[in-house]
Image 1 (cartoon, rainbow, N blue to C red):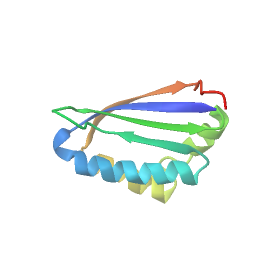
Image 2 (tube, rainbow, N blue to C red):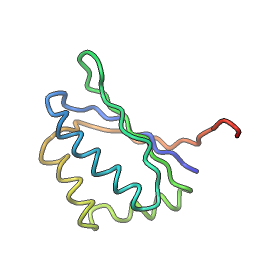
Image 3 (cartoon, rainbow, N blue to C red):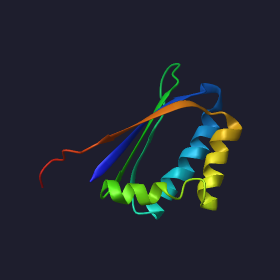
Image 4 (spheres, rainbow, N blue to C red):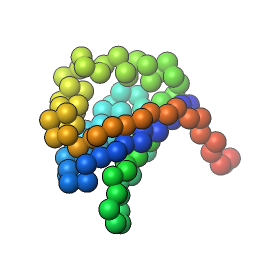
Length: 103
């Protein structure tokens, strides 16, 4: 399993647009073989940081999903929310390997 951690710098005045963007991506990840663990937005005080975490069974599965960017109409619509609203100022992706509790 590979987990992608996306660290966002968002425009705090455009949190509602960011939430719309996030809801779209949560559904798309889940529809295309991944598991979305959610977006984590500022809860208290002034902050411009947000996080997203989602996993795919392998890096190859993630790469298949990435091939849909800019091509699949639903992906284009999701990106349009971000681009037209300006809710995301920048972001950085990191791939991690989870260490989970044993059952």
